[in-house]
Length: 439
Image (cartoon, rainbow, N blue to C red; front, side):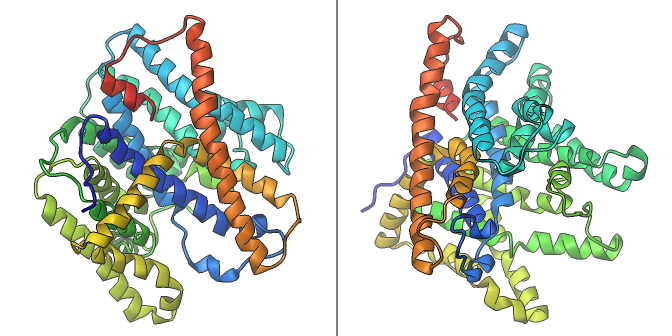
């Protein structure tokens, strides 16, 4: 029988690593498809364009995970010394790899950037004060995350209620959308909605500390991952929100997109993203094996909700169903994996173990996969056929994983040790904090 995932202080981190690894992997796959001929300048199978586009949902998951880990790993902030230690840990974890990422981006970039643009990106103020380096678009989300790290200092210092803060952020974001003609700051809505996801992770860490007595079954974890793959296309809550917004507002509750990606980064998080919030939060609870009231009922309801969206598509837009085969199959698999079957459990075990390993290098995967993709685009060697496309995709994935592993497991610890040897190191943390600090 496949060994079940035991929730100990160490494997507590592993559950989150699997979810984080999954999110990073989907972002990479989404960009391989969305960037078209970048992987192979001479060939792109157009059939792939209808397969999957769930990168944005994965960013929302990253935000909840980030808030959760920061809250758990930061015991308390009482004074300026605690603030210094907190910021130091975040700096060491994020900045060395990020600087390397920016350097590699400039090395392969097809665009010339001003000194101000590069400096703004290095200072994480790119979205607010300058353009994002479009040759590595995914770094836009780090601006939001670093800002949320700073806001967390006030929340932890004053011991503010994260649930109330989250509700306030969502309310302010929605109010600003309708009052933007007076506020003239459309990006405030995006910051508020993004922060709603991040603070939700903090709330989970604070209020859901009880673990299930039973061990987690791998197939149920993989089942939930397939459910997440369904959501960008079949989220019943999204459909309900769309219908209500059209009925009472006359359109989508989001700012229009003019085709400029740097404008989109300022309004990246929209009202409809909130319909994914419960799935992101429950995902964290499931992967940490947390106990919560009405757990089985909640899981059943959120699993059933996509059926409403599937029915709506079949009833009103049947011509689109052939292009939605992949998310439909993912939804079916999310149910089939609930069946207790030894082979399913064993295969799921290997999937989760791979995702746990991937989670350990997920940050480097996220910030470096686009520069590596651009490097592939610069050579036409072995290009132009389906066979070369498959070969280049496999070579690209191998390159991304190897480089990410070297940077996460060799480069980043090397930089940290250099800093610590020079006498700059945080106080000794507990074992639990030390393991979470790696996140």
